[in-house]
Image 1 (spheres, rainbow, N blue to C red):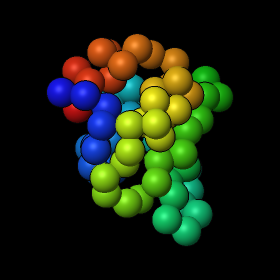
Image 2 (image 1 turned 120 degrees about the vertical axis):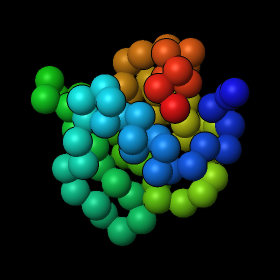
Image 3 (image 1 turned 60 degrees about the horizontal axis):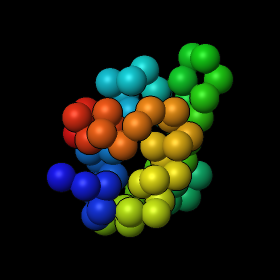
Length: 71
């Protein structure tokens, strides 16, 4: 599995497993925040492209492999 072409619902669920919660929604984007202050934006469209997924993983602060295990 790769970061390419992920479903936004799976991404939100995986971030939830890491302790992120939906803070708010702005248009077609979900803003998720962690209790320690980290946050990221997940676009609500399918598929989420690989470059955007890389940015989300970087915001979260884990490796791509760790994130893929959560999906």
